[in-house]
Image 1: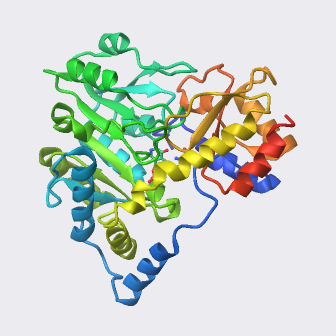
Image 2: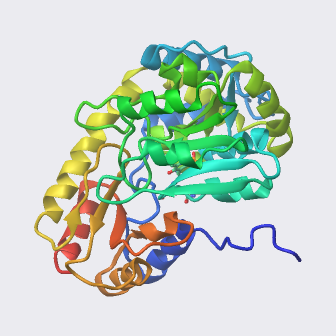
Image 3: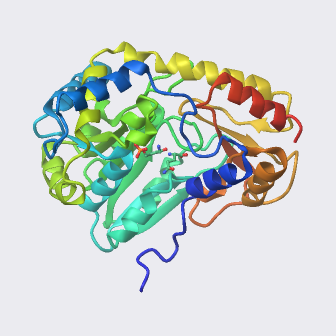
Length: 378
Ligand code: PMP
Ligand code: GLN
């Protein structure tokens, strides 16, 4: 067989979670909570099943869910999206990303990706015959140099992929970034894929700069969200994409043959649960407390912590501990100290030599304390 993705192996998340399970290590690698979701949410799924909502959902998702998504987007970002034509429920953020990329990227189209980048973007671009143009960002602040972005743009640039709050660096786009972005894409035929799966995981009173806030950006953006992240149920694989109708029409042509529609009972539960704003408004406080607790613990260690503005990831330099490559260091950390983490070189297409690893702090206080006890001995 001729591989479609010769440069791609098994994702680092699968690899590290498997290693953590094999060694019985505390798994701070793959990003998911180790605590259960709210009981009410499970009850809503069970009720939907009991009431016989067990057949195909409408192709674009349950209307009741699309309506609350539209309400939420309007309340939070002041943007009006039509649930009929501009919102589609997807099998997680992942499927929304793949579908959005397939919707606009044609062979030899160029797509700008900022690295470190979540590992789902580049393979989807390559599957469409597109060319990845990556711009490397550097620790500790990982700011985007927009002059360099300008230089990367050609008349074949079809899409720019953004992710804020950012995985793995936990940085967030600022208003200055948005202004630069608007000035760069103005008068050009470029689409935006904005991965906003961590939209509710924002700290210290920061503002999430959703593309939905800005008319010039909204008109050409696919915005991706994940209810798995928002409701602590990554295993539900439930997300959505919002985009202007002219893009969503094409998106749905692909979506209908990729999955047709997404599991019905979970959509019923999400629609009901999302009606209460408190069910997402508490998230910044909830995760900020975990972030602060984890960071305070690690102050006693030899890891040097990078800033964490949003998401549920904490990056750390380990150069005071070892000069091993990050991939070797995380394996040794898992084997010898019983804590699994993610090497950030996995988010760079050509690897890097930065001595930075990523921990996920979406864990109980008990897990975080246990992990800190081990990490201060490293
Ligand atoms: N984008 C980013 C930046 C992520 O970290 C993840 C992983 N949760 C996803 C997309 C995929 O989201 P989902 O689990 O809903 O497919
Ligand atoms: N987004 C999660 C992370 O960054 C992992 C999702 C996955 O395993 N595909 O850890």
